[in-house]
Image (cartoon, rainbow, N blue to C red; front, side, top):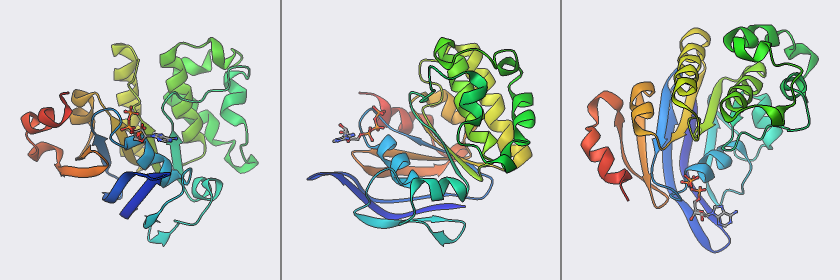
Length: 228
Ligand SMILES: Nc1ncnc2c1ncn2[C@@H]1O[C@H](COP(=O)(O)OP(=O)(O)OP(=O)(O)O)[C@@H](O)[C@H]1O
């Protein structure tokens, strides 16, 4: 579904991603893990077209989208739930969901709200008045209304209480199994990544240092890459 080929990205003179190869197969859940500052967010932003790519390609369903704008990538089916969630604080939950939405997509709203019953009761509440967990669910719902084929999550469990983490896990598994949405998630919460992902990539200093099927990777070797 999504292929990143030999991607190199820099901020000014400093190279932050070096020669990254990563694949999200059709219908798979892939987790990218690694310590703070190794380049995980930079990779998601590069896939989304938010950063200039120095070398390499991003391929979506066989099509080279490397030169496409962020909007064009979104239209072609890449959804993005950024770190910090980017909810509009002075828009209502409903407005946050539909802002910028095409008329064609409005019918998806009902279906998405069924995945998040909690949001149904909050539609007229201001986005800024929601808890962190509610905002995370709103950010996921907002991405889903746009019917992505592949969904990128940047640390969906960060700062979220355990009961909501379970809810988010349920939703991600459900959209993956029932809607066939492929998922790439960046995560520091190792147990969550191990529970949810079919395939894991580990990143260190801008490079992929370990990868494999989740069930085949020893959690001990993962911990070695994650402890400070
Ligand atoms: N806009 C920027 N300008 C310059 N350097 C940046 C910029 N954004 C990030 N960096 C640097 O690039 C490196 C990778 O950052 P990135 O945010 O991608 O890491 P990360 O693995 O997602 O970390 P975290 O888990 O803390 O979000 C870091 O050294 C960071 O300081």
